Image (cartoon, rainbow, N blue to C red):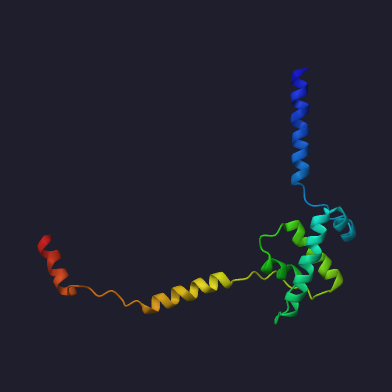
Length: 140
């Protein structure tokens, strides 16, 4: 009997893991997705959406809501980002363009390194090349 119980417990745990790792249910409507969020996350969706609308107004290039969210909040929960993007797209449709990740950090690092490299002088040999070749011949 104890073997059966262990198997059932393992199967139950495996089933729970499968449910947790399964893809999000895309069959739910946006209303259902928002309704199933905890109240705190519903308030977050509204708060982020309001801030992002202001951010969208400052954009000079076409950008999707998903890209804007990724640029503003890269570490935000993926599910929350998805819901916010869908809510914003439903309330204020934008032409859909691919996600554009911010390269600000990489560009700043590259500019710093380029500036630093430009200030360096190439290394000059301390002895003329001819003397180095002569020393090699002597040592051999």
